[in-house]
Image (tube, rainbow, N blue to C red; front, side):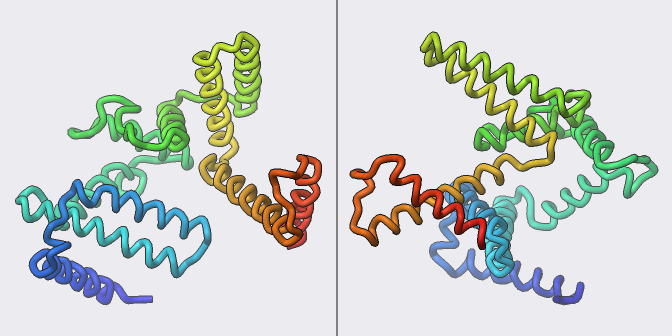
Length: 263
């Protein structure tokens, strides 16, 4: 681990390296906010993958890659005389101080719920803040993450179930409504009702402190591992999946599940 002075020295070093890259490297010199955007998204997903894998070395590497992008955007802003890395950091510091009056001021909080509610209320009061509770949610977020953010923000201003158990009635209600539309074979309404079920289930996950994105990814990986086992075993025996019945496939599927449990 590094000391505070060593951290500051490392920060100065990377800033100096960026100055050199923008001056002397053709590729770095050509980059713009627009060309960096998709690369930044890719780096964010790679960091997410490292976190899910609990790989500390990979997390450190991917954090570095993402940090490079933050410095890159700031350098471009400096070249355009709009802002620099100091402005970015100072703006962040001011925001954190303002939104944590229970730490840097006299506000009293009873727990996390009070902190979240204060955070959302303060965002609405900021000079350049959001004009409504949900206006700050990026439109380009994936549907699951967007639903999570919508529900958390609504909760932050008190729009929530009185008791979390009440959400189950909503889930069952939405499932019943989908089943009714399935009987009518109305594709448009079926899609709408299916979306309502997903939204209700994501709300359920929030209430029970489950990350739905992580939960679904966990199931994705579990399915991939089991299917890969099924595939590998049939290849070893010279059997084609296309020529197998579902019952025959299920034998290997259950074997894969038993192997998981014994690990």
